[in-house]
Length: 328
Image (cartoon, rainbow, N blue to C red; front, side, top):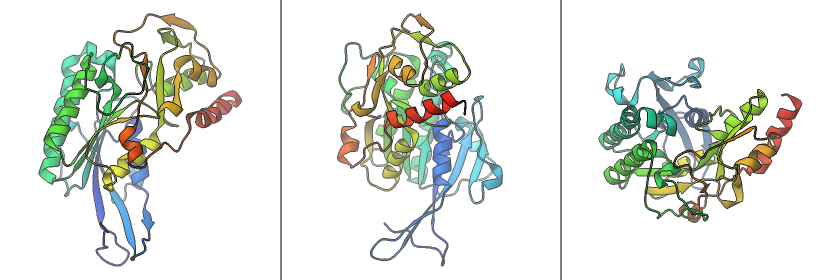
């Protein structure tokens, strides 16, 4: 469908609500969508322009709020997703919601499971209700933790695999995913994401481990490995992930559930990644309860839709290693 301009040179906005817009993925989505892009199809011209409507409570130390000087036609609300009714103005008609706001730590979910459920399940339910109110798409950032420990599994995970969560975090994200799939069968997209990485990722020992390893080496912080270092993840650059989100926005993907990661071609174990960065494990500790020893995405449905990762992890990390070695 071509978006016709309201007047010459003035495109029709696609209003996109981005929850968690100050997080690592949310900030990358904000930056991508805040750029104006134009294309010219054969039968005339088409302008595509997203109007970001950001929502974040800035509760994390690593939160990066949008640059208020460059907001222009975009909007940002400092608010919790469960208090969206408290924002100081009515939302415009939404074309889509990209729901990234979440409690993302397995460890924290065990410490405070009620708050974890409130944020991840109740917050997602509210976004589903909002999507139904606006009759708009909802893109939900889920996690590989909905599949549980996967003990003994050493093959790529299929899109048809059943959810078997084993931690409060996995349960709350699984609940959110089920809300989206059941309440929005024709408008909901659920992406069960493996290990996402990128230049601006900070990460912690519990979440975002590529960024955590990079920052540990950069700041001479000893690296503790829980397990034996052979745990495998497929690694997906955040810009490749946003390509998938855009495919959903542009009707190039069917609504539904997708296992989402870098695939077998971008799968490495913990020790391999650390070695690529020029580091080494300082201490080994016990496996944490329900840690996945192997998770690699099959990406079956995404491949059929024409998507493959553009950024090869080894190319990216080679550049990072060079910058770490040179002290840049």
